[in-house]
Length: 66
Image (cartoon, rainbow, N blue to C red):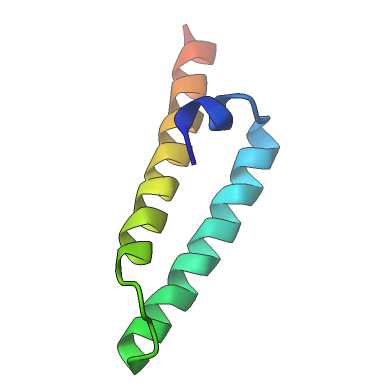
């Protein structure tokens, strides 16, 4: 997921998306711990997705505060 795509979404959509990605990350971690995960790189990608979402939300908060 690209940052440009995230900037097109509203704050509420971003918060919902963050919740969904965090849930998916949790499920991926559980699969990894039980030995069922085939592609471990998916965990890294979801972590980065969460970070991008948080960054976009933080940018908006900073812009609103100025």
